[in-house]
Image 1 (cartoon, rainbow, N blue to C red):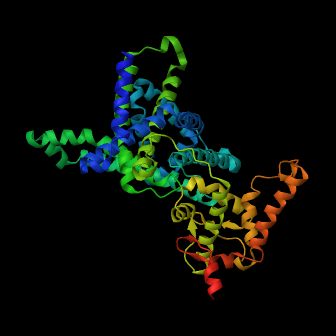
Image 2: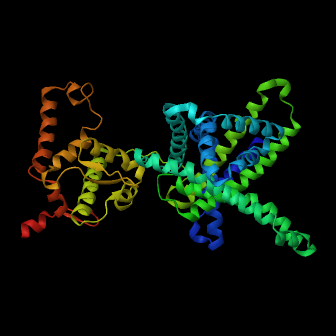
Image 3: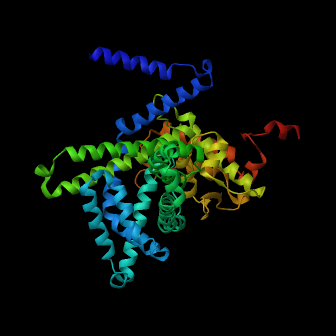
Length: 457
């Protein structure tokens, strides 16, 4: 039995990873891509502990932040007269919990209605908003990890973007729900539903609406939350799969709840137990859809073996010069500053690998981050006043401090002399040269030293 399973898995792996896509037709290529995305997503979710750990972390944060989050949302919805729909929305989300879902909904609604902003005071309101923003920050970190994004939003962007989600998001969701409810109770809808011919279609559409609403919500989350540009098509593909899984798993979970009697084991904790399980399942499904969207948009990451690539010292040094050349070229040509993703794309390297190099340059005050909607990079000093040796030292001396540095290493006099000669050679080669000189020797493909042209001139 075990040999049969092992042989089957071996054949499946060969089919997925050893099949040449060039030999397939249009639909064959799409099918192969779907199999590879499914393989990688299952690996990330079930065999890589990072996504599951982040789902668990989000469960804990959600328990702490749920009431403050809903309190802020209710304060906004009251202005639109839609705050009474909060209980209905919560009940629908917790529908898989059955009677326990109704119990949890009632408890949460009572907590939210019991919050008195007048009694909280300014400090209490500040803590309430901090709790909400902390939840959004944890959610963004989970999505950034899935998308291999290492550059976080600035504090100003976090504050404005998160409040936009908290304040505008509920209005959009409840507007969609309200519009659906209005349409389903209209005379025209009821007339179509009563017709024997169109009634079947209306019934089918009625069952399809919950899927469409959850796919719509997931699509917006996948586009807006990660700190990178997510294409609508990629977000929709991930949301479609995650939405179908979420509705299906919800139905299965509800069936399990009704058939299982865990009250005898967990007693009063049974409700909280199932609530936490459902939160964990929901976050895992949401991150699963994000993983699908990532692999759909980035085919270069569809590899059987996870890439653990370490940059050599030579690559770090070359990347530092390449980054500064790109940034200063845009500066002199008065082009818009580049983001980390744009820098990585122009240099032909993954953004998560370029991130530590950029951080080193920012730490040495060679690069500076802009406090704009999307974090961009500009020269921190005038290019004509920045020696090229400073760029090299920013990489070579990265992570050194007063305790752990090159002077700590004991060498023989001969080795120390050789090492110093090597260092001096690099300093002599870059002596008197600045960032401005570097830009004069750069074409659109990268760093090109034009010694031959200088000799000819």
